[in-house]
Length: 131
Length: 158
Image (cartoon, rainbow over all chains, first blue to last red; front, side, top):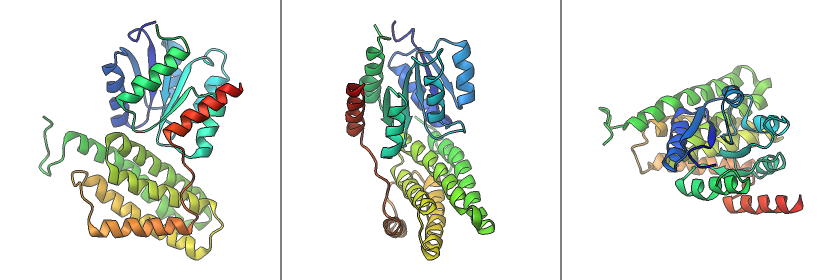
């Protein structure tokens, strides 16, 4: 699948940051970028759109990003989705919690163009989503 | 070129101010409620910390370093104070520090065009760091490289 075809879902409750992340992704060739501000909206999009990668903040809601990760990894329909946290949360206990729940990568804000190139592509290649 | 308001703020700064003002107001309400409901202090401090994370993450993404530093200190003081068995005096001091942090944060969010901090702000930052040290210091954080190592270790153990 190409970058243009991959569905990328961004969950971030702050509009400014949400738009900025969306712009960064589109700059790197991801054309099918869906932006939403809550886990509730994300669930609706997952039901109706082809999503291959979720980029989520942690602190929002409830439900929070980690609640959503837990939900995704326990749902047979969604458990194989690529999931990356983009968050300011960098405390050791929380990061380990996310890793144990099966997050594919964990990016500490600010999200940069370099991180998209290295980390986002890395996850997509690892999960054989990107050709 | 971005247009500037009469005050000299760019469109980005204005939108940042608008969005962050909501979080600051909610954080203010949490601290105010502690005064009337001291039995809820721990929960309210944890809520306060959540708003600080929201401000910090946004400021980090947009490159507003001073705002993110203030928000981080507020977050850590709130979390440590909520979790610790600190004395009433230390807790009162922590809440006082959070009020100072919030006031300065409100100013910093409204003045992102100012790149240098004032002497008063530097003194406040130092006081906040001292308060945080008295509470046991900031929680352990991991760097991006450490996260990469943790991920690799987790994958190799599966």
